[in-house]
Every structure is written in C-alpha cells, then in structure tokens.
Amino acid sequence: MVSRVIPVEPFDLVIFGGTGDLARRKILPGLYRRFLSGQMPPEARIIGAARTDQDDAAFRNFVGAAIKEFVPKNRCDPKAIDRFLAQISYITVDVRGDKGWNTLAKMIRSDVVQAFYFSVGPGLFGDIATRLNDYKIATPLSRIVVEKPFGRDLTSAKELNAVLAASFEEQQIYRIDHYLGKETVQNLMAVRFANVLFEPLWNAQYIDHVQITVAETVGVGGRGGYYDKSGAMRDMVQNHLMQLLCLTAMEPPAQFEPDAMRDEKLKVIRALDPVDASDIVRGQYGGDPSYLDDCENPASLTESYIALKVDISNWRWKGTPFYLRTGKRLKGRMSEIVVHFKETPHSIFDDDAGRHANILSIRLQPDEGIDLRVTIKEPGPGGMRLVDVPLDMTFADALGPEAKDVPDAYERLIMDVIRGNQTLFMRGDEVEAAWAWTDPIIERWQARRDKPKTYEAGSSGPEDALMLLHKDHRRWREIKA
Ligand code: NDP
Ligand code: BG6
Image (cartoon, rainbow, N blue to C red; front, side, top):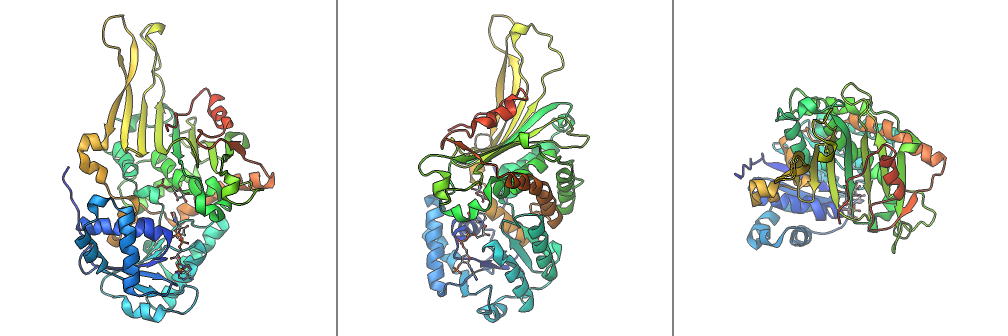
C-alpha cells in the first residue's frame, strides 16, 4: 500500500481542555501520529488551554507522557517527540471568566487556519464560543470543533445550536462524532458507492434486515457521574449508532461532499418511525462492581445496554428492520454493521442441499474488514450440498501491514477540520432531528419509571434482547469474546 499523506496548511490549534482525559488519550497522541506522518507543517502550532496554572515546559511534559502511554512504542522516537513538543505551548484560561483571554488573543495568528477544539464539559461550549467572539479572536476563517454530547435532548441541542450560531456560521462549526472518522465507516461509503455489485440490491426487496452492534467490554468506570445522567440511548444510540444507520440507509449523495452527504443522512433520520415500547430492551450490568456500584447510585434506572428495532418509512426500506444494540461490560469488544440479505426466491436444489442467505458484514473494530458470505457447493462427492463460505477481506491481509496503521478517528477528523472539510461532521439540523426521534423514546420510559433488566457482566446482554429478534424469527450475531 502506498502512503499518500497530504500535508495541511499551517495552523493554530487551541485545545480548550488540553489537560483533560480526551486530550491526553486521543487528541494529543493523534496529533503526534499526524506529525510523524509528515502531515503537520513546521509552522503549525498547538496550544493547550485550561485553568491549571502551568508553563509550557510542564504542559510539554504532560504531552510527552501521553504520547509514551498511548502511542505504540515503536513509533515513540525521542527526537521526533522533542520536535513535536517544540510546536506546543500552553496558556492558562478560564473559559467561564476573563483570565487568559487577552493573552490568547495576542497569541493567535490571523494569517493561518485557526481551529478551536472544545474538549471541555458540554456546559462550557457556549462560554468558549461567546468569548472567542467577544475577545475578537474568532475571524470568518476560524473553525470550532465541538465535542459530544451535543445537548441532552432537542431543547438543549437547539439552545446550543443557537448559542454557537450567534458567534459562528454553520460552515465554521464541526460537531464531532468520532464514529464518522473510523476507517471502516468510510469504507462503507466505498463499498456502497464505488461498486456496482451492492447498490442494486441495497433495499427492502433484497435485504431481510440489518444489525448494528457496538459492544464494549469496559464498564462506565470513572465516568459514572456523566453516564448515569445519560445512558446508552443518549451516549451511543442518538449519535454513533444513528450515524452508522444513516450511512447504511441513505440514498447515494450526488457527491462525497458535506452538504450532499448530510442532506441524505437527514432524510433517513426524518423517515425513522417512532419505536414501540415492545421493540426496546434496556439492561444494566450486574457483577462486581455492578453498574449500580460504578455509578454510585443504587436506585439508578439508567441503561448500560439497549437493543431496539427501528423501522424506516421510505420506499427503499419499508419492511426491512434495522436492529441496533449497544452495551457496556459485554462478552467482547465488537462493532459491526451486518446486512442480512434475503434467501433466493426459489431453490432449484433438494431440501437436503440446505439453504443459506448472503451476509455482508462491515467490521469497524477490532480487525477492520469486510466479509461477504456466499453459498457454494460443498466440495467433493455426496451430491449437491450447499455451504456458505466467507469472502473475507481483512484490510491488513489484503492490503499489507500498513493497512493496520490507519489514522485513528480523532486524528483523521482533526486534519479534516484543518483542511476545512465538514463531510464527516454533523450538521445542526441533523443533530436536532436525531434528538427529535430519541426524545419520545426516553420520555416514555422515564414517565413509566421503567427499570432496566439486569444482565450478567461478560454476557451478551439481557435475555429479552434475544427475544426481540426471536419473535421476528431472526437471531443476533454472536458477540465473540
Ligand atoms: P475532563 O474532565 O478530563 O477534562 C476537562 C478539561 O476541561 C480539563 O482540561 C479541565 O482542565 C478543563 N476545564 C474545566 N473547566 C474549565 C474552565 N472553566 N476553563 C478552562 N478549562 C476548563 O473531560 P474529558 O477530557 O473526558 O472530556 C472533554 C469533553 O470531551 C467532554 O465534552 C466529553 O463529553 C467529551 N468526550 C470525552 C471522551 C473521553 O473519552 N474522555 C469521549 C467522548 C467525548 P482544568 O481543570 O485545568 O481547567
Ligand atoms: C464515546 C462514549 O462516545 O464512545 C463512550 O461516550 C464509549 O461511552 C465510546 O465507550 C466508544 O468509542 P470507541 O471508539 O471505543 O468504540
């Protein structure tokens, strides 16, 4: 595989929340990897900003330690790290007050791309946007990167959109959903729209159902405070799984271009039917520690697992359900989109031959790849016996070891911000439409004070989730340990 890294223009990137967990684990190590790839020009500057009072040297130590912790050892070249750190500085800023803002205004160059990454709690997003404007730091060329969660319901998302819109144009606002930056998610676009093979079959006539799974082995750990007010529906379904559903279900856009893509995704969200209560299963992991221990709330009614059946009312998908599930402390870490095609309308073979439907699975993680199961004759004597075999394309096998070294979602997305490409970011109306669909589902279980089912930590989720598919004569794909 030939590496084709295109350097970006010089930039000033300010990371508000530069001392936080996300910056430490994802943003800063990701930027170092882009630097190593030769994508970051020497004139580019990264500025960490937070309340902690420290100098550049202390922040560089913090960044160096983050790189050593989160970048594979064979890529931690001390000289390269030093050169990267030389492009980094720190400023003490209180985004709720006045401290640091005048200094920041003097630091930012007006003749390079300016990007401001809001990696702070969601309650501070509006404060930063407003101050960037009040202190005349923002210019028409500035870009802001807004982390999740983008609101907690339609009302709060609308309010946040309005606050951001008071200081920035929509073309300047990059709402992050890191699932859109994952390599295989973009490969889904390539599979669908760069092959003639699948698109003619990509509809209710040929597809029986679609399963989208994001299974995690981790619990809510130290994030219990945030998570307990959120739950799997808000934390994962409203954004990540919704985006995966949209990319799977959308019509082909005329171009792979921001508004064309986002218009098509929006149409899918607006075509989602309300979900019946009987088509939703919520769970909480048991074990030691259990979900209730982790969130330190013995009376919590928040779900750490959710499975739901979603119908899309449009010509392409009417009658083909999308089953979504996601949960914490499950048997394995596995994210995939699986398209189950229908069986052939008629079998010319004996019943004894067996019958299999084609299955296309798009694995996001681990082992990114695409696998298509096709039916063939079982080799050898014994008459016509059919067997389904995988046409497996694990990217690392097909494209060589470099394919394993794809940019992490965050690093790809940050580079897209610098390039000014919004294709893989959510537009304001898209986020609002997703909340408009999500809100009534959450409101219903809150009004009824529905208690999630307990499931065993390390299992595949609550038993009732199996029934969700069994009652439709279907089966979930196995979550592998
Ligand atoms: P942390 O609590 O670890 O970090 C918060 C950061 O904000 C710190 O750098 C803190 O530094 C800074 N901060 C807090 N108050 C102020 C203030 N008044 N002025 C300036 N800086 C301030 O949070 P995370 O890094 O975990 O999360 C950041 C954002 O990213 C959140 O919106 C979160 O939802 C989102 N996110 C995080 C993920 C993760 O894995 N961590 C995953 C997905 C999204 P100081 O105390 O020095 O001011
Ligand atoms: C985050 C959620 O957005 O995505 C977390 O807040 C979740 O709860 C994480 O663990 C999963 O991301 P990934 O990339 O590890 O699948």
